Length: 442
Image (tube, rainbow, N blue to C red; front, side, top):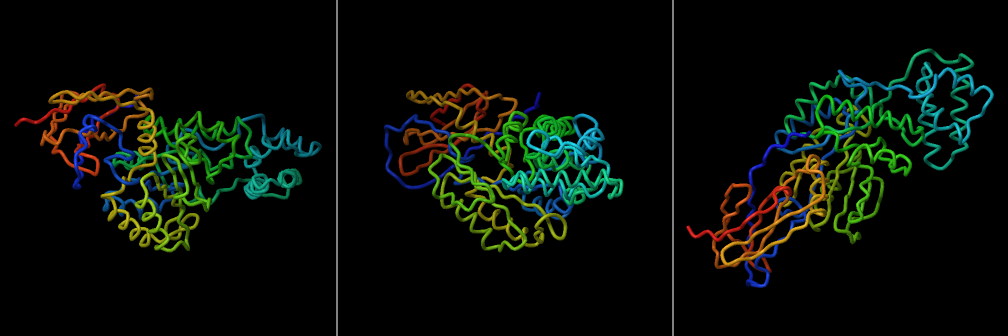
C-alpha cells in the first residue's frame, strides 16, 4: 500500500473588482489546474543520462522546480532484471533461420531475439529492422533480420554484445542515487529494461521489458513510482499501447482520455485549435532549438487555460541524444520559474493524477445561513490518485471572512472577488467526504 502523508491545506486568494451575483452563492467547482493556475508544465527527461543528474539537478534544486526522469532500469546498479530474451533458446531460432525465411509469422520473435544472439553488431540490424517496420516497409524489415542472422550463422561477427548509446549514457546510475532523488520530490519513472524497440517485439518480450522494469522500480522505490512510463522513442504503435497501458496507469506516449487532445512531440499541430477540456502538448527541445522558440511554448500555455505543456529533454552538454548545453536550459528554466505564479509546474505523474481526479470527482454543495457544506465523491483508487484538488466556492459577500473546516482542521480565508462574484479557493483531498465553509464571526 502506498503511504500517503497529509498535505497542509492551501488557500489561494485571487482578487478583481466585480458586482456580486447572489445566485452563485454556494456553487462549487474544481479548478482546471491546481491552485487555480492558468496552465501546467511538466519537465521530463529520458534515458537517465548522467549529465541530467550532474548538471541539471543542481539547477532545478536552486530554482525549486520538480521533474520526471524516465530511466532505463536494466543497467542501474542493483537492478534484479537485466535485458534478456524471453522465449525458446536463441540458438534454436538461429538454426531455424537457415531454412525458414523471416515473415509476418516469425518476425516479432526473431527481432526480439536478435540482440541476444551472442555476437557484436546485432544492434544495428535490430535498429534498422525497426526503422523499416515502423515506416510500413515490412518486407525490407524481414530482409534486414535475415541478413543479420546470416552473419551470425556464417561466423562473420565477433562474439559479444552491443551497448546502445542510451545505456552507455546512463552508466554509473544506482538505485541509491534514485532513492535520494525521489526523496527530494523528483518522480522516477520507467523507460523499460533496455530502451527497446517494442514495436518489433513479440508479446512475451514486450511484457518482459515493461513488467520487469516496473518490478525493479516497485522493489527499490515503492508503488508511487510505478504510475508513469514512457515507451522508448515516443511510439504510439497500437499493439504496444494495448500491451503497455495495463502495466502503467499513465504513459507519456498515450493517455486515451476522451476529454484530452494529445499533441506528441513530433506533431506540428498547434494546441490552440483543440476544443478539448485539456490539451497535452509535448515539445522536445533539440540541439538547435533556439531559446526564443522554447520560451514561446510557455507563452502559448499562458495564453490559454487548457494546455499541459510536457517538455521532453534527452542529452545534456555532450552526452546523450540531441544534447543541449546546461547553461541554455538553466536560462530556460529561469523563464519558467519567472512565470510560475500563473503556471503549475509539477511532475508528469502529478498532473496526470490531478486531471483524472478532477474529471472523475463529483461535487455537491448546500448553502445555509452561515455555512456551506461541500461534498465530494469519486470512483478512483485512492492509493493511486491522491493529489489534493483545488475547489472554488462562491460565498455571500457579507461574510467578509470564511473558515474552511475539513477533517477536523480549520483554516481561515478572506473572501475575494472575480467577475462573477465573491469566492474562496481551497485545496482538499478528494477522499474527504465533506468540507464546511463557515462565516467567520470573529
